[in-house]
Amino acid sequence: SGNATGTSDKLPVELQLEMIRAILPEAKTIGIMYSTSEPNSISAIEEYKEAAPRYGFEIVESGISTIADISLATDNLLEKV
Image (cartoon, rainbow, N blue to C red; front, side, top):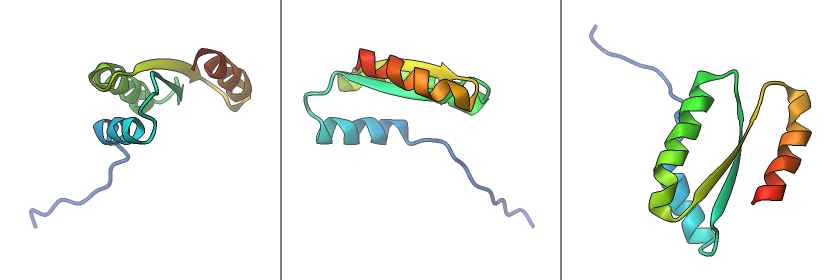
């Protein structure tokens, strides 16, 4: 007893930002679509917005609440990035 197990879907935000910077050195803006009904998505967006300036990025976000919102949210992001 005393052992703990589990899984996590927490995103490695800093690692992802480092990778984006390495692959796209000229990038200035990152567009992120997320689910407004999932607390983990909302906290991930906050983490990205906090970390992004350290890598020279601005985060543009588009929250969706249903699958029907995806097309409009995508168009919205494409206009801004």
